[in-house]
Image (cartoon, rainbow, N blue to C red; front, top):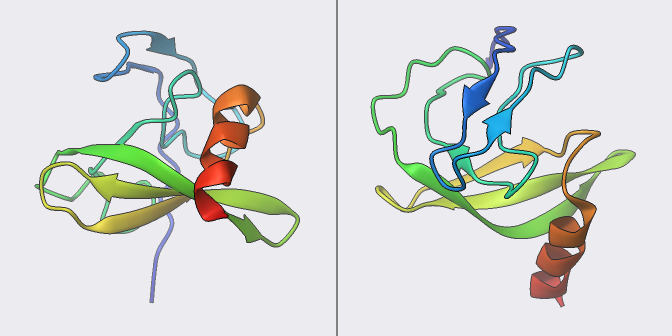
Length: 101
């Protein structure tokens, strides 16, 4: 059973070096500027994964009334998914959606 740990901290993105602010409604798990994430969680928000590789956004899938960003870890090559955030770069979301066709 997956457990959720709220861990909403601001950080500097390791891919684009921009400041990523807190979401203030759930755990921040990816950069809203470039959409990259980091392979840090086993369960959402736990920060217990030792891989620490960058998660490259490679696609989008419909999830309930929103979308999930599909990632591939650049270090271990595992696929991972994160729900998009309200402040994500919509131009990049649209570009990623073209990978699904």
